[in-house]
Image 1 (cartoon, rainbow, N blue to C red):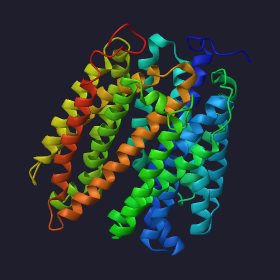
Image 2: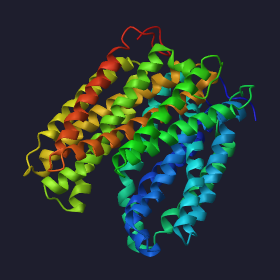
Image 3: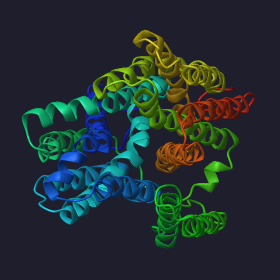
Length: 459
């Protein structure tokens, strides 16, 4: 098949490529959330404790985090479409293994393989979007991609509940198989073919990357959840040291796994900082809000799910609009305005009275979604376009890594804040801190004013 044109794919191949990209990312996002709903059921069936069942989720998430940047590097070396197809195949086969699992060990092992497959999809996703759309439409493409991710995330709990109401938990994984096969069939013929980078894979860098993320995540878990501050702190220190070694190693390399070459580009580095702050604030809110609705406002599980819904719906609806605007308006401006609105929404949630009505909560949640939606697509577009075409994989891997880093930091901060307020009030403290972190993200976005705008003469 011929190489991809320099400015996107022709129609109708472009549309088939988009469908393949959307199907794959939907599967990866859904499986990050649907399993949570089934954890109590799985724990009862396997006769295990709840804290043991958590590893069904943790194994998937940890493998994704440690694999994103190495998978992005493999995409540059062997071809994005090849890594994407291998990732889809792994994910689909692992879904079958999950559905057939009869013990916790079997299910966790299958989830580990599934995590590698999901990392292959997530790390390459943004690069494929870049080469599927013409440059003038990239912001719109990023916005539509963000809409699909938001809607998949928002619908995951309801979809899981619907499946569990008529079938057993293995069907949560079995439904992935026909969708995965369809996505593979479309991807094999429609995805863009991008010239590969001629270099060796950096096994040492991949090892350091895995050690760094693994030690950090393990240390955070021991520090915040397991009540072992000394060992947790030592592991975190080891993780940070590994990151420093990895960064120093990459300074003399043309295409390092940790993309220090891209992070030295001011607008790229500031966009990464903006992303980390925004997703940290998002997770601070999304982890603490269910506790606020349950412990303080005394709402039922069904009501809590309904109260959380306006946020992702607003992000999904705004995604295409914000993305189309990003093709014409500075991401610095849209990110700054969006995160300021986001911060106001978070502050308003922190001030909620205990007897607040549904609509009193809903407009605050929608305001958060409005602000977050204004920021996300333009910021993603800027990160991808700031990288040279040959480093699109690294930029996409860093985009996903920044998101997961921010979310991990946010979840950790919630645990710490709740521990500081054992008598209660940690929920509103977490929302207040989230508002401050969103303001820091707005400041990082504002620092991009005056920097050259990717794909345009100026910012």
